[in-house]
Length: 231
Image 1 (cartoon, helix red, strand yellow):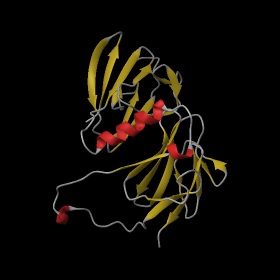
Image 2 (tube, rainbow, N blue to C red; image 1 turned 135 degrees about the vertical axis):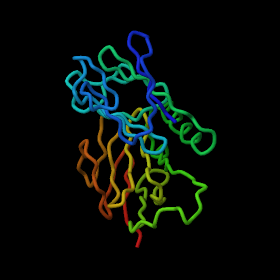
Image 3 (cartoon, helix red, strand yellow; image 1 turned 30 degrees about the horizontal axis):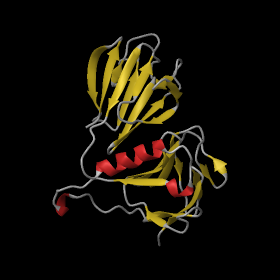
Image 4 (tube, helix red, strand yellow; image 1 turned 90 degrees about the vertical axis):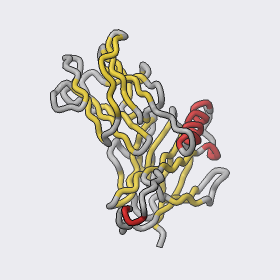
C-alpha cells in the first residue's frame, strides 16, 4: 500500500496510508491531512488513488503545489516524488509489487527515459485487480456496454484495445498522461500530467473529466485513436 510521509525541515511528522480513494490536504480541520499553516490554503490539494495508481491535483491553492521542485496542476505520482507545500514536504512511497504491478512500473520508467514521442511508444497500461473471492461474492454484472479504442496512426495503426479494466493509462509519464476510467455511467477521459491536454474531436480538453461518446477521436502524445462502443 502506498503512503505519504509528511515532514518539515527534515523532521518526519507523520505517515499517511493512502487507503482512501480521495484524500484531501489543507489548512481547515476537515481535511484528511491538515496542515495548520498560513501558507497552506483551506483546501489546498487532493490525492486520488485508483487501484495502484495515485494522482495529485492542486485545488487552485493560493501558493501552489510543487512536485520535485516543479509547479503542477495535476500529476501522476511516482515512487519517491516529493510534494512541496510551503515549508512542508510529502514524500510519496509506492509499495512496488512483484508480479502484475511490476511490468507497469517498468513501462512507465522506460517511457521516462525516452525523450522523443514516437507513435510506437504509446503506452496503454490497463489496471485491474485479481480476487480469490468466490463467484457468488462478485458484484452483479454492469449494464455498461463494452468499449475499445482503435489506433488510427503510427506503427500500430488499426490495432484495437479493449477497455475492460477500471482504469487505462495512456501516454508517456513525464510528458503527457491521461486516463480513461470505466464508471457505471460511462467512460471518462481525464488529463493527468503534461502541459498539453488531450484533444477530443479536434478540441483540447480542460481539467474536468470528459465523458466519451461513441466514435470520439482522441489525440494524446501524437497518437490518434477512435473510441467506440462494441455492439
